[in-house]
Structure formats: C-alpha cells, structure tokens
Length: 451
Image 1 (cartoon, rainbow, N blue to C red):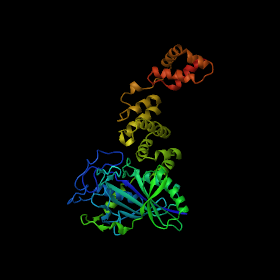
Image 2: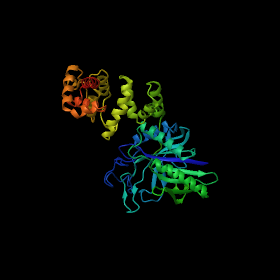
Image 3: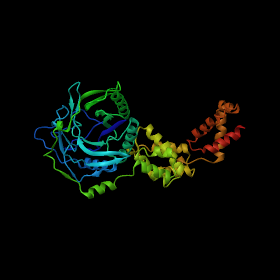
Image 4: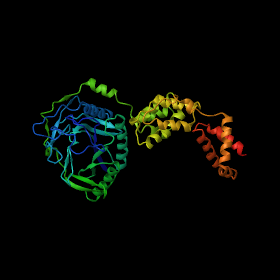
C-alpha cells in the first residue's frame, strides 16, 4: 500500500509583490523580462524588505481557515538558504522550517489532514538552457499547503485536488490563470520516501504517482531522494538525494519582525468566507429543488452560483435554471469570458426572464438581447415595443401566406412527409418579424394552411 503526501503551491492573487511595491505578475499574464523589478526583489546589496503585503497575508489566513486550520497569532519569517541562480539573495523568505510558525496548522479538508499552510516568496525564473534570469516574478507571494501522507492512490489525490481547486476559487485567493503546482511525496511499505518536484497539472500528477509506485515496487528505495517528472516519457528521473532541514540552514530573518494576528482580524476574515461548494450544492438541491446534475454545473464557479441565487428568488425556477446553465454559459463561452469579466446585472437578467414568462418577448428575441448584454447589460424593457412578441393571428396569417408562396420546395417537402420542413417555414416567419412572431402560433397557422 502506498502513502502519498502533497506540498501544493499556488500564487496568491495580489497586485503587488510580498516585500516590495513592484507589480506581481505570473502565469500566462506577463510583461517583458525584468520590467517589474526593484532593488528589493532583485536582492541588491543593502536593500531591505518592506513590511509583508497585508492582502497576501489576509488571503493566506483565509486559505488556512477554509481548510480547517488553527490560525497562529504570532508568525515568524525564516531564511531558507540555497545556492541557485533563481534566488538573488541566496535565501528565500518563508514561514516554513524547523523553528517557523506558519499561518495555519493542524487542519483537515475532506478527510485529509493538513500539516500546515504557510506564505513564502517566489524565486525568479531561470532558463537553464540560456542562463537568462527573469526577476519579474521574484518576490511574488506564494501559498504552500502541506498535507499528511494520507492518500493511498492517484485517483484519491486527483479527486481531492479538484475539490481543493474549487474551494480556493470560491474564496478568490489564488491567481486562477497561474494554476497550482505540487511536490508529491510517495513511499511504499518498507521503502524510503521519494519526492517528485514541481508537477504542474492534474494529469501529470496522476501519471507521476502511478509510475513512481510501479517503479518503487520494482526497485525499493533505500534512501530518500528528490526526482523530477518527465512529461514526454511519463517517467521520473533522479535529481539529487533528499535535502534535510539542516541543508537549508534555516535562521530567523532579522529584517522582518514577528507578525501579530489578533483574534478580531481572524474573526473578521472568517466571517467574510463564502459557503463552500459542498454547502452550495446541498442548498441548491434542498432549497431550490435543482437536480443534482444541474446543481453540480452551477456550483463549479462561485460567481455563477451566486448570480443564480439572486435570479431564482425572483424568477420562474425552471426558466432560471435553463437560462443560466444553457443560455448564459453558452454566451460566455462564445465570447471567451467569465461572468466576473463582464457586467451583467442580476436585475436585468430577471427582467429578461419575466418578459419571456409573460410571453411579452419570444425566446429567440430574448437570446438576441442576451447576446447584447456582453460586455454590459441594460434594461430589456427599454425598447419593449421594438422587441415585443407578435401574437396576432391575422398578422401572422398574412406572413404565412407570403412564406408559402415564396418557398415552394419546402412546402412540397412537407406535403411529401418531410416534417422537418415546417420548422424551416416557421423560421422564415421569424426572419420576417425579426424573431418576434409567436413560434407556436406561427407553426399552428402554417400547418392549417398546408393541409
């Protein structure tokens, strides 16, 4: 049986770096190399750090809270020394280490024990092929979540990580564009622990665990070691023997004071946490009678489920479910936008649904209006006369006669048993009325005329 533990790293979503006011950029959002830098984040002689970024510290505490951790009221910074080109100072400022006090510890999330949650700074980006170093990300705030070796297999790890990513997206603490990386610690009975470093996707984490367990069964590790994952070969390769804490020469940082976190601040941050995805899912199913399949779609993103909760209170439930899950998500996907990147007001969406429910506008016309809600929504009632449904039988009958005359091939097809042709003819009426004709009435009149 395998024992698996994780050390998960993610970028805290902040505007500035951890110990200076330089812009924090990482992941897919980036500037030209070495633009967002200063003497502090490039480790110039004599440069001293500013007090830690308050936003980064608050978000680190939020992460610890949502993972059920005990929050430490006194936090100390350590210098973790190692000699590598990406570390300009020769050490990394971190809340980990033998004598460190992390942001949070002794937590539990979905049955897995959390050893600690701590904040630290990111090194620079070093390209070993060219030797070039980009300091843009140097000093960016990183969160590290360390678990106990409670996992037994890759499937359990991946399912847990998916839930973790979902929860972190709910509290809006992690840069969603940068993703998460993980160091995976794996051991089997009788063997020493092996750490596989810096794996950057769920698929790679799964493959690395499965390969490493098979490898260890064939060649039982007698010494702790650090390995890297080769994505192209789906194998791991030895990097070095595993470092011990003394190898990093941890010492308290004399330039950074102990941070005191008072209980009032902790309580305020705890009160600001939203409901978890699991709680939201249960609420949608029990309170709003949403089917589990649809509830799971809605709870994937907090901005969607919170928007839906505002909509359902003042709309027909079945209409609200369909229009949020199908129509709204389709429009966002088409425009390659997230809901929090556009300005769609809930009251405008509610207004649109109410007009559909009262049959004051057709669903086709409503779809057209919804497309115009991006990037900014408006009151659909504003030009209601221009959009209102045409349901008068006399007016639609005139249009039906015109359509029948102009589309003899479709009429012939319908009379020859090709039932789909009626939808084409209805579509022609919709075209002539700019999608305002009542679809049901138009179809009934056409069917009557074609008998």
